[in-house]
Each structure stands twice: as structure tokens, then as C-alpha cells.
Length: 347
Image (cartoon, rainbow, N blue to C red; front, side, top):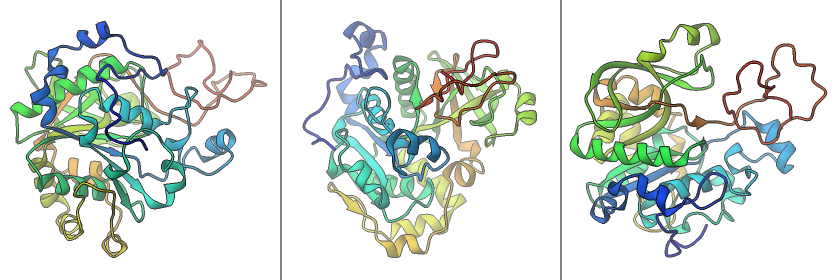
């Protein structure tokens, strides 16, 4: 990973590796370029997952069993690399933390995006709650920053729109310090590989659709997905923004034993930190969405973006009636191909 002093400009990079123009950057509004607001922001990128669901595909591309997030895209940049570049458009590069897993070291050690001093290295993958809490506790000891939790295995078709949504989420969270703001995408199909958020009452906001949360449904099967109302639901991107305190307060209510166990670890203090095995040996896997967000839904708000712009790697699935005989796409990013417009498993 590169040194934090080698910071990209706030212009950022698009998913294709091309530079976003100054004009496009200006269209995102003055908030992104407010230096005072930026100094109060920190980011936590989650890239410690095992990523084995697409192992046959990543093995085909890379010739090894690396997690999917470390499989390079056609522009040679990995998904965590793109996550860092997007984050730097809204958060100072030196104020990003990277949650990784030690067993993946051979894959992340040479990644040019992000500074080694900002790594938080887990001895094992215990799902999303422990690294989020470790990062939040580390930040709590420094200041009352707003933090953004950013999955490191997502791809966004429209990076400008994502940045605009993240800026709005920071703005909303700054004004509502007791809430955590989730970014959601308005669904346009009965998707079974995304988590869904059930929306409650609307909360007026000039930057988009802001709602209370009534519940979550994680990756439903097709029939339940078809019954989820598009106007009262959102796809969960798992991008979250809020002050440190509500993150820790939710965990204290939902998973107090996990929080206290993580609190006893030696926290990150400005240099690469390896979490002790003795801390993780006593932890069960804890999913932040299922075990914290779901029971603490009253503390959440969802900012829903009107058009779908999030995409994920998925297992190639031939369309009904596809004659086959074509080469498998690799790597494959879901682009919402509709019936009749081609087969997502073929080139």
C-alpha cells in the first residue's frame, strides 16, 4: 500500500481508471470541498472477508484462491483499491482505516492504495462486527469524528452519484448525531443477492429520499423478493455514516460481550496494528447487520438513491433458453441485464 503522503487530489478516479473531470467534481456541490467538514471525517474500509463464494471464478482469473476483493478488475485495480479512491473524494487519505485479515497478507501487502500505517489486521475473519467496533473504539479515543463504514468488495457503476450520496449522508449525520445513516439503492427488480431494508416513515430532506427503518431482510429467495414493495424498500449497500457514539451505543445494547471483548484489545493509535489472537479466540462471528442494525433499527435512517447504481460480483447464471457454447465472463459484474438483452454468463 502507498504512503499516506502520496494523496490523490479530490478529483478522484472513476471505476474505469479514468480521471473524473473538475466539472463533474464541481457538480457534486461545495460540501465535498469544505476543508473543515473533511477534517472531521474518518473512514473504515472492510476488506477482511474470506470471499470464497466466487472462488472458482477468481481461481480461473488469478490462478490462486485469493478472496474475491483482491481479484483485479480489467483496469488492474482491485475492489479495495476502488473503495479507497472513492473514499478519498470525501475523506482525507490519512484518515482512512483498512480492516484486513492476516491470512490475506500476500494479497494486500502489494496493493498500492492506502498506507500501511492505517491497517488494522485481524488474526481471523469473525465477520463484520469486530472490525467495525475495533475501528470505532480506536477513533473514539481521538476525537468525535463522523465515520463512514465502507465495504471493500463493492463496485459502483456511477461513482459521481455514489460520492454525492456519501456527501449527503455525512451532512445528515452531522445534523442528527444520535442516528446512523445507511445508504440504500431504490430496487428495480426482485434481487436475491442483496440485502433489503424495509422503509418506514419518510423524513424530509432536500438531498434525496430519507426514511426511518422498520426492518431488514438478508438476501431473500426469489419468491419473497418478488413480494417486497419497491416503493417501501431499498437495497442495503452496507455503507453507513454516523458519529462514533451511536455505533458503540447500538453495539452496547445488541452485542455487549463482543464490544467489551474488543474494548480490551490494544487499539489502533497511528501505526499498523495486529489484533491479538487472544482477543479473537474468545469471539464468535458477529454480523453487524443482523446482530446490531436489525435489533437497533430505531436508531437508523436510510438515504435512498432514486436510481440503482450499485453492482456486485455474482456467480454467472445462464438465462433460460440460452444455447450456451460461449466463453464465461471473467471477471463478471452484475449490470442488471434484462431478459432478452443477453445472458449474464456468456460473452
